[in-house]
Image (cartoon, rainbow, N blue to C red):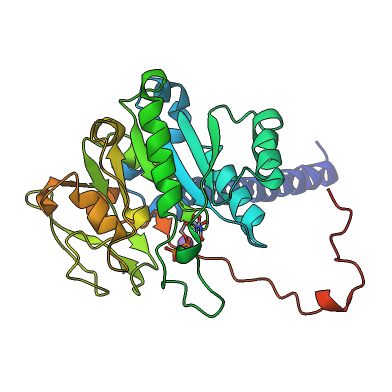
Length: 326
Ligand code: UDP
Ligand code: MN
């Protein structure tokens, strides 16, 4: 080996060593990045706040087939004509489409079924495959309709429609799964899917918090954790009500309601007492209530109301802007 080729070899070995070091550093960096990525995946923001048990209960969507064996939930929704009606019902229907094993009873506040609602129901059935849906109607008597300028709480709402649904459930009990659950879901609230999972094993009456109800951020039953019983409520508005909570805050065993054929919603109650009076026909004490939603610490339903749309330009048009639309 001559001197030059010896030098070249030394250079080559040196270059190889430098490259090797670079490769090793590169591989080390890539490995560190990979490990970090894997760790951050494991501690993703969605996962980090959830206990394992909570994660499992949230996974109920993956177990849809099992819900065939669970009691069916009968969901009663009163609804009345206004500009945002279809928008509210669309939102609610798209939530309910994700809930397995339910029967949705829509009761329109009208003398007869309207074309709008008939089409809405047909579309749900035939376009989206919504299986169990019943469309009823029952008009609110004139004397109980809100007059222009009345505050929204001035009259009881949805009473006649919910009673119509109760009558229908009692008349059709033979053909229904009367071991089911009954829930009154107004058309304007927002419902988390987990709520339906929570109410599914109701024995008599299950209860949970409702956000934006009773003038509070959240109106809720207070639970004694040592006994798992409801001991009081945080309600402020008409807090002397025997059962001071909102329509969206409870579900019942259907059997109990069907059997007690005289039990109805009453328009004769003082304003704000509709729910309390109805529940009082079935249970006499708070300790009979079954707290859900992690001992009433989770919000799974929001008592919302859609703002009226601004339509001030509409009157300037010769024809309504929706003229001729499907
Ligand atoms: N509702 C009705 N007829 C009316 C007013 C309301 O059928 O004249 C329905 C409405 O669509 C909703 C329920 O009754 O599903 C409760 O009404 P709202 O949401 O206005 O009452 P609040 O939220 O103030 O209790
Ligand atoms: Mn409402």
